Image (cartoon, rainbow, N blue to C red; front, top):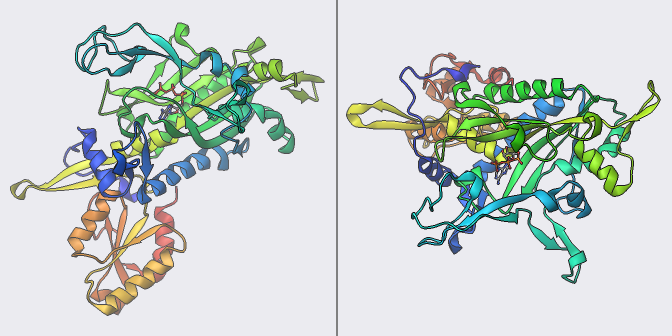
Length: 460
Ligand code: ATP
C-alpha cells in the first residue's frame, strides 16, 4: 500500500484526547449533541466527515465478515421488540451495574467495578454503598403506561440473531457452521464518564453470532479471536497498541464459557480499554448456545437445526465477536493522529490523520494549482466529476496549495491530485502522498489512467 510509509522521525502521538475532540469538531467529524442547550450526557452527533468515517468502518467490517466469506449472512432486526426477549436473555434480571455515589462535594456517580477507591476519585468525599441498577433503557409501547406496556431499547444487537436463527437458517438453507451478522444501534444507560465517544448512551455495534457444531466451539473461538485482531491490524492499527485480555473464570457473563477482549491503549483513564469482546456463548447444555436454549425454554419453540445425516435436532454452540462501530471509529482516529514537526525553527507543525485509505472519509482531493485560472479550474472539475462517480472525492480551491494540502492531511485524505499549467499541455497530473508529503514518487499520472491508478491504490 503506497500510503503506509512512515515519516522518518518518531511520531508525536495523541497525548491528550482534547486535541482530537477539538479536531473532530473543527472538521465536522463529531459534535456534542444539542450543543446550543449545553450538550447532553455522553451523547454526540456525527457530522459530515464522521458519517463517512463510520460508513467506511461498517463497510470494512462487512467486507471481512460477510462479503469475503461463504458462511455468514446479514440481518437488520428491530431495536424495540417483544420484552420477553430480554427476560429470556437474562438482561431484565442481570444487566446491572453497581452504582456508587459521592456523598461529599461533587455528588458524582461511578460504576463501583470501574474505580479502585473507597473515596470519591473527584473530590475525595465518602462514597455510598454500591447499589445495583439496570442499564437497559425502558419505554412504553401503546397509549397507557401500565406495567404490561413496558418495552426496552435493545442493549445489544445479538438477541436479534438468536430469535431469527431459524428464519435465517431455513431461508438461506444453511448448515453448520454458519453466522449471522448485524450492525446497528444499541442503547445503555451509562452513568460513568464517557471519554468522548468511547462510551455513549447510544452507539453502534457490529456483532456476529457464529453457530457451530457442538464440541467445536473452543476451536472456533480461537479462530475468531485471531481473525478479529488481524482485522484491526490490517486496517492500520499499530500492533503494539493492541493486547488481549482474558476474563477470569469467576467474572464471566452468565452466558459465557470464555471471553477475550481485544484491548487498545487509549490516551485516557487507565489506558487499556475494550475495543471488541469475543465470547464463547456456548454455556447451554452440552456446549450449546445459552441464548438459543433460553429462548427455547421461554418461547416453547425449538431452536435447533435438523441434521439429515444424524437424523436428529441439534442445538449449536455459538461464538460471538462483538465490536463497537463507534468505538472502533474513535480508535482509528486516535491511532492515526500525529502532530508532525516540519520545521522547529518556524514552529511549523502539521496535524495529520494517517488513516488507512479504506477508512478515510475522502479517497482523494482534486485541486487546481491556482484557483483564479479558469483553464486549471475547468480541467480540475472534469477530473473531479469523473473520479467521484466511483469514490467519495473532495474538491478544494479555496486557498493556496500549501494550505489546501494541510487541510486534507488533517482529515486523513490519502492523495491530493493537482492540476497545474503543465497539465494543460501533457494531460497529466501530480499526486501528493499524504504520509510522506512526496509529490514525485508516483510520477506524473495521465488523466486517462487516473481511475485505474486509483483502483490499484484502493484495492483493499
Ligand atoms: P464495557 O466493559 O466497555 O462497558 P462491555 O463489555 O459492556 O463494554 P460488550 O457488551 O461486550 O461491551 O459490547 C461489545 C462492544 O460494544 C464493546 O467492545 C464496545 O466496543 C461496544 N460498546 C459497549 N458499550 C458501549 C458504549 N456505551 N458506547 C460505545 N461503545 C460501546
